[in-house]
Amino acid sequence: KAGVTQTPRYLIKTRGQQVTLSCSPISGHRSVSWYQQTPGQGLQFLFEYFSETQRNKGNFPGRFSGRQFSNSRSEMNVSTLELGDSALYLCASSLESQGGTDTQYFGPGTRLTVL
Amino acid sequence: AQSVTQPDIHITVSEGASLELRCNYSYGATPYLFWYVQSPGQGLQLLLKYFSGDTLVQGIKGFEAEFKRSQSSFNLRKPSVHWSDAAEYFCAVAEYSSASKIIFGSGTRLSIRP
Image (tube, rainbow over all chains, first blue to last red; front, side, top):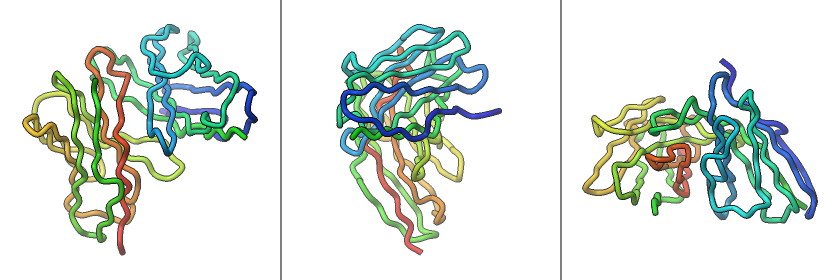
């Protein structure tokens, strides 16, 4: 079974631009979560989508948004990019996270650099 | 609020030596605990997880972890490390009500001395 895939793997943008990252979960997985990883803040939870609805949200500004499609694929968008948005963005999928028994499987990440 | 503390930023051990990575958590109820490993340029791979039951959990690649409620700890161990174990290790905790929201520790970078 194919793992979680994220595209693109690398991105370079300038301040003020917007960016869209894509995540394809493992086949059959319905929950997709996004995380931001930076050297200073470490790994931080952005949000989770399940059945096309945002189910959980971390403490990030409204510039960070996401969505999930009917095939469970997910996108996240960052508008008005700032230098501090430079990070590795990780996507994780799980079958159904209710009750915490499902393992999250992580993709390789998208490395975003904001100049 | 939940939190996870990994007190060791960087550890170096000799190949073949034993390893213990420390992790302390703060959570009111019984936590869901995880250890993940991240190799350079890679995503996260789950080593093991604890939800309930036996407090000694076996994982992949020869790793194990022990949940100690009295010490709020979930330390990761391996009896004999291999050069390929060099990576960053993250301890994490998840809420029962929103288990997809994982709180990660700051990570411990493991280097292996030949």
